[in-house]
Length: 410
Image 1 (cartoon, rainbow, N blue to C red):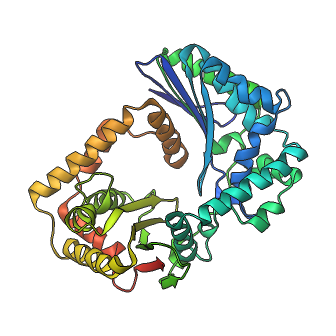
Image 2: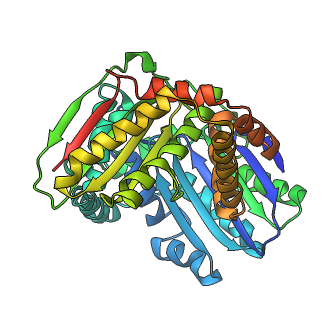
């Protein structure tokens, strides 16, 4: 793998694979938390409307540009980033990479397209409100982060979306879509030196001789976040939904962050043998699904246990969750269980990294967050070094009495 920084300030990483399929992504530190001074939801709205035309290509040309080559073009928005990514045959990689930077630097945001997209995004907001599991998590995060930029909904609100204009979109892109806030990553079966040369050529064409500016974005202290609550929302849904959780280590949490990753995986990770899945679904049949999510941001994080069940099973589910958390807080994992948990997580990561698209997106996120990409050896070492005591401490800290919030929707 080769990593570096182009003259304009764009960070990049290229990695050779053994597949005929090539992947490239452009990550931009311009997510929802950076919307101060703009309408709520503008980051997500920008992601939608980047594809509506550039100075050189119409929307119809953009939509078919990679499709006719058998490729794919996509994008998504998070609280901290907007990501454009594409999948193509390796011989078409240069076209895909150039298109991503063209979308990021030359989008025109035609007023007619913006008007149309307002309706599309408003419908998307309403569809999330119709999904109890999505709706309750958004509400939980909004209240937990109250007073902090992370509290803002990614999609915005119907009222805020209505106020977004072409001029505001251009101003947002002008301020946030700058090379020093970007990371470009490539995974393909091409010589890495050739891929690096391709990236530098594309960056030069997009930004010319631009000199990188110092990034002065405000970083908010998580110390001000002390929101703890127990809320019940009545929506007369068929099932009851619940979220239980609280603040967790940030992206820069070091060993505490890795311990939290292991804790989340043990409690309610994607594997069917997670503690809560075993107890709530397999043993008692109280839920269709239960999961533990750990989301890491630049200055804080959130760990949340999410479940949906029949209303008559809600109290039993909540009691069982509390009981299992108390067990982890009271007793350290045995050496055998700790080793098994580490092996499971390492296996999940290895399988994920075998997917070229996942690898490309992960590389971009790492570059944006840390300015570097951790080697497989470093990742293994970080996980293997975590102790049972550190996992227990993570459970005690994250789910501490008086610091754990809960939201129920019935």
